[in-house]
Every structure is written in C-alpha cells, then in structure tokens.
Amino acid sequence: MDCNKKRKVVLITGCSSGIGLSLAVALASDPEKSYKVYATLRTLNKKQRLLKSVTEFHRDTLDILQMDVTDRASIMSARDRVQEGRVDILVCNAGVGLMGPLEVQDSKVMKNVMEVNLFGTLQTLQAFLPDMKSRREGHILVTGSTGGLHGLPFNEVYCASKFAIEGLCESLAVLLQHFNIRMSIIECGPVNTDFMLNLQKTEIGDCALDALDSHTLSLYERFLLHCGTVFQNAAQDTEDIVKVFLDAIRSPEPAFRYFASGTVPPFAKLKTTKPDGLEYIRAMGELIFPQDHKELQQ
Image 1 (cartoon, one colour):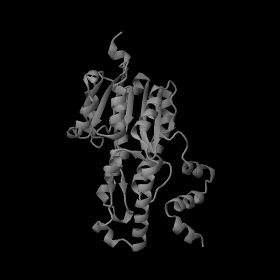
Image 2 (cartoon, rainbow, N blue to C red):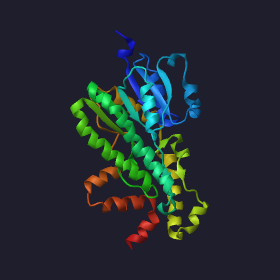
Image 3 (cartoon, rainbow, N blue to C red):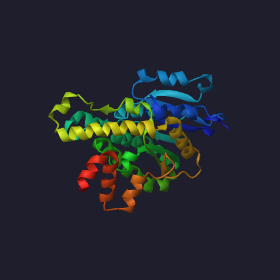
C-alpha cells in the first residue's frame, strides 16, 4: 500500500513555539511514521526553533509552511501546498492573548485578538472543511482555554474570543457528526509556554494607565501578582498539554471536550451547579481580590 495513503496528514497552525511546535515534533517523531505533519507559522523567520527540532528522522514526516490565519489567501496557499491533497487532522492552535484594563486597550489591538483567535479559526475551518465533508472523514482539534469557560478580570477581550470559540466548536460538532468528522476542543489552563512572553499586556508604568482611576489600577496591580503566583504554582508544562492532544488524536472515538488538567476546573463546574452566576462571581473575586471581597461582604 502507498505509504502516503496510510499516513494521517496533519496540519497545525501556530507552530513557532509552545503547544503547536511541541505537538508538531511529537507527531512527526512517531516511531511508526504514522503522520505527515505540516507545521504552519505566520512568518517563516520564526522557524528556527522548529528547525532545531528537525533531524534526519523528520525529513519525510515534517514540512514547514507559511500560513497567516488572518489572511485568507495565505490559508488557501498553504492548503494547496499540502502534497497529499488532503488534511486528515486539522489543529487550530494559533492564538494571542491580551491583558489589561479594558478602558486603556487600543481598538486595533482588540480587533487583532478577535482576528487571530476567532476569525482566524473560522477562516481556517472554511478552507479545510469542504474536502473533509466530501471524503466523509476528518478530525478537527482546537486549542481552547478555561478563559473560554469562565470570565477572568482584565482578560475581557481574550475571554470574549475564547467564549466565541466554544460556541463555534459546539455548533459545528452537532453538524459534523453527519459527515463522520470529529471535533475536539482541548481546554487549557495556565501553561508554561511563550504565550505569556508574547502576551500583549499593559505594564505597570505604561502611560496609558495615567488616565485610569486609582482603584482599578490598584486592582490590576494585585491581579498581576495573583497571575505570577498562579503561573509559579499551577502552570502545566507544554508536554502535559501535548499528551492530551495526542490522546485525542489517537483515540478511535475522540471526545468533544478534553480538560488539560484531567478534571473539570472548579470554577467551570460552579457555573453549571449555580446557574444564577452570582456564586461564580463571588468565588472568583474572593480568589483574586480576597481583601476586597471581605470588605464587600461587610
């Protein structure tokens, strides 16, 4: 049998670092060479880290393509460069973050978060779904976030984009079961990747904060301290997240939703068990701003 027909063809977006890079290398390193991986990056000048992971073993299992998920022409060009003429497993991983008080966020920056996280995923799906539907097979995996399951202060725009991804994936999953296409969303919490280094974050001392009221600024400073503690104590390694992706990819009956931590996050569970929403808001406030929470209760 033709080797190319036996292999699963995988295309992954956002492979310059982090989850995308590690997943691409893990699949391309499969001892049985079960996968042909197309690792895509917005700009090829960021491919050095990926190239360092490429050995002789990966010569026929890994290709690097330029693909900007915000540019439809770039997506179509990458699709047309897949030598096998099909993609069996599509991983929508490209994403950006934004942190800071909403009042100081630039409209262009906010639009870019939506362009990458939401519309980038939408455009990628539009490009690859028709062929999957015609072949009546395929598996789509999307990098989700607990920030798409519950809101986080000072992450309003990022959470809005990830909430939208939840609705997109759930809606599509209902339809795609009629085409034998699986949809899986991997819900990630804090992860030790370059995502945080590349995060668009309003820094303390930024002149944009000069117009901000003192109370919000004080809360933002405390939120940043909280984030530092969370990432120091609770962030998962990239390898742990990749294992969840691999479990989903290798499963003969993949689930729709996977939690990277292995369990439903307590705050996500709280939203469903206490649907009026107030319990969640109080609990998140107590976690991040404990002193203020006590004062609010008085």
